[in-house]
Length: 180
Image 1 (cartoon, rainbow, N blue to C red):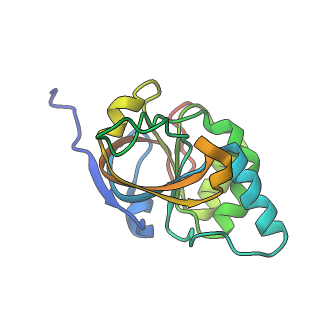
Image 2: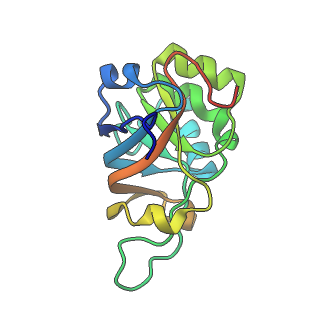
């Protein structure tokens, strides 16, 4: 480990707004606590519920959404591979979820300029998980519980309890983007 290597920041959910505000683009994070998986179809359903002025199936305030559709769970394991999916597909759904108090999202890849502005406005962050490392990331999951939309199969919303889940701050709450 080089002398320039910074120690990772440890965060727990629900996320504290002050801790989120301290995060800097490019900083390493070890996340512990509950995160909620949600991909494209779950986001569409969230948007439909909010358009109808209905409540989401769980309290999203201070929470983290992980753009992930876990694979089938092998015998003796908590979960199958649980790597990130491309975040840009969820860009159209960010505004209403951030207005509900969502504090962070986890995915891979670039986000739009609109999402950068929204994250800055709502003091939230975009965290990057390593693509292609789903089996390794699964080792950080200690519990898995279904939440809603079971009919979506691997795209159902699942609450994962994670321990020291390794992430990188992709866009901080000031709108600074690791890709730019």
